[in-house]
Length: 471
Image 1: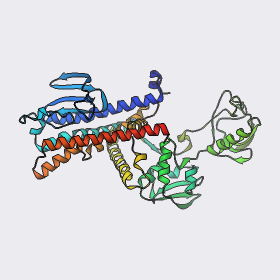
Image 2: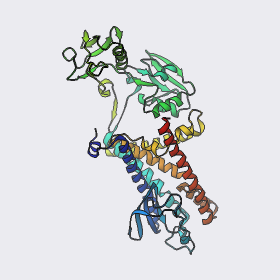
Image 3: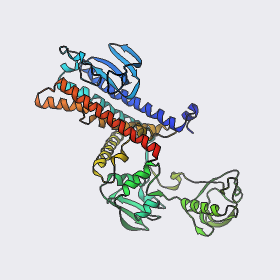
């Protein structure tokens, strides 16, 4: 168990919540700092800088109070009570704070409305820019510290073991999946990923040295995505040999078995691979947990017959063995390390790839018959559930970077109330030379914020529904 989890003595669910709020807080602060930075750069007064809202979003005059606030150099820095975002209040700007009185006077030099259009544009894009830069920075840190690893499909020595869904589309034990939609893949563990984001419907497999093309039926991707939501791997697992890694002290077979023994058969049935061996073993002990189990194994170059005794204290029958699961010892996995300088272009590339991945996900919601909005949309619960129940720095960094990309993209959407809505009005002003009135912006923002609140309620409502129904 991770040290942080041990020290805090908290449940996995609470650990997910804590990680989510830490990541969310970092991203909100960085996003708002982007607006703050460009506002200060263009000598624009920033009246407030808040993590979370100090009102009942999106109703700026309802339940106004802060958990903490302090004024420093003319800006009120605070912590709001409503944890759905944050904001900076920039003087002379129509925003979520809905301060109409401040907009009645003549524009002042320090106000947003007195700035040039290109300056206002950079102020509004500041949050998005900072979220993208943060994602790049995190990925650079990640690759510099952890590098990356992948399993080339040609190195899947023993092939795959398909699950029920994989068998239904024609996959077989021992297949090596080499291509998706006719395009070669780099990582054998990303087959389903490529299937989801490819508009092709074929898998090319190496079956005993012979190339076979399998047509993937419609509906397979949808089924695979549902399996993934249940935290399971869909279509197949990498097939591994059943090799003893260690023998438990209480095992009744510790005198006859040795570390490194490779299973060949169980009670006369072939069982060279872990899944085959464990499946057949469970069936045996379910029907008879008292009789010895005859195992044929390979020890070095010698074939050994062994009659294993079961430990029946748990009434299920156990051999007292720990199986080898270290992928590095079983397969030729490609490991890449990066120096600090080498990690920079890799981090930038990863940011671009993740942005493209997210855009494709959104496109699929609206274009793919296999991806349904009600099944794909999720709120804070769905995002929080992505974090592991035990703290893992590598995973935390990757998820924080990816959510930062999501936040940047969503804020760029041309929806009133979001940064992209302001950008849309500013681009109209820059192209036509006609300024959109504050009254129009205010009303558009009001509608946009209510729609955004409705969308958030719907998305989070889906999370609650799934929690109660298991859907």
